[in-house]
Amino acid sequence: MPDLFGGLVPDPQPQEGTEPSRRRRGSVPRLPAEIWHQLLACEETASAYAAATYRRGEDQCWPWCSALSDSGHGKLKAGRAAGGAAGRTVSAHVYGYQLHHQRLITPTLAVPDPVVAHACDEPSCQNPNHWHLISRAENLRDFHRRKGAWPLNDIRTGPGRRSVRAEALREAVRGAWAARDQVRALRRRGEPVPAELEAAADVEAAFHRASEAGRPEEPLRLF
Image (cartoon, rainbow, N blue to C red):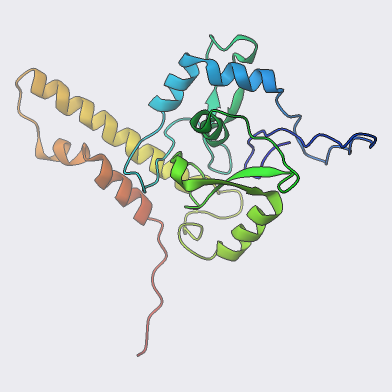
């Protein structure tokens, strides 16, 4: 069963003596538990996950800096050392949640259809402190309740353009990383670093500019 944003989580098991429910239209077959175990045990995959995550402060968003889905969620491809899971592509935040907690996402009676929700409303965020497991229905209610608030109301997003904000954050971080590498190379050679390049290498500043570029204008207050 895919979560709201394309991550695969186990389907709830039918109770004994009942017929399995039909798969809903548009759903994706779940990954078997043994495949998830192979993914989570693969050091190559874990290294790729870490390399694609821009880790910031404990309470800040950690944007994903690799492949993105149409909805702006990170996509992670399993490494060659992942056994039967090699080459599989999964949602980064679903992989990250299970890696962080060292256990698979499992349906319960209380939450038979769990999804990994982002409290920060940033779909590419990989900060475990911003994740929580809730039901699919609750996740949808939360989205509709907050869709007019920042950052869900980023002016760059819209029908068919839900990944634009995540793409902007990703490219800003990538660009700053590249500039930072150039700065380090110049310093190793003992060459001067242009002020413009030094400024471009400020990852936090680049991230902030990319984020704020989509903020709606505040309505004018008459009083």
